[in-house]
Image (cartoon, rainbow, N blue to C red):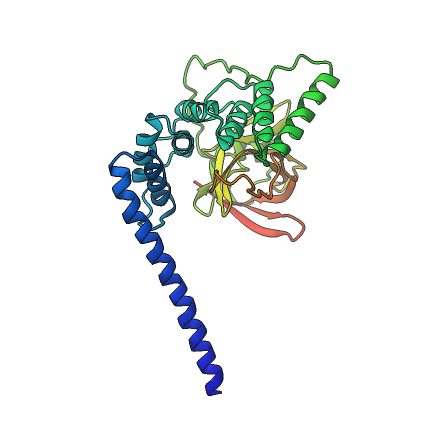
Length: 332
């Protein structure tokens, strides 16, 4: 027993020792590089920016990271130009600005920096900070892949399939987003409606109650029901919702997506079915410099999901998926 405890203690001390050594090394690196960065060394300025961004050798500080990337980027350092665009796109260390993001990433790409070439393609494909242009997106992805940036291969396949499908339909392919006419007057907000017990909720009444209220899930705006982050409409009796572009974090990156929902199968008891799916529009990896980054997601529409819901006095109670997970949307 004593031998077992001794081994456990030894392993614990060893692990702690390794962690302490790792921290010590990063601290030493930071101290050395900050002196060089302050003296004007561009690579050190970029390295210090990365250390602040990742919290290596110092506390994580996005504003300091932005400052150092900005310093080196203005002097033409390609990696720093890319990271500066990355922060502008994410809205980290500075206010989100897609136009500036595209501008800085493009400058880096023009110098041949592979990750920047890849993301110029992504930004062209999605119309982020630039007019959407699928052909230019494909061109930049091919340049990136030819230079050895592996994630571009999947994008090339996806875009070529998209262009081929458009050509097959014999339709002029215009990837630019449609302009939406501005409303002449701001519509009046719909009055909040409540559900009284005992009232018969036919299809028309249920749709009106859904549309005339805003819904939330766990104190966050609902992505699949009418809310402050969705635009819902009823055309020819069909009710549907589309969210604005949303984001969530994964260990490997930040995912941008849009949720589209269609409603059907309304009953006379306030019941209905919601069919929804996520459409992933952009993925920014946490380590964008890694040419072998593995992203376990495909761009575009994801698997459709179903919820069977019922409108109650104050909530919408739904059961989603094959496991019938219960979720409750509250009225705001």
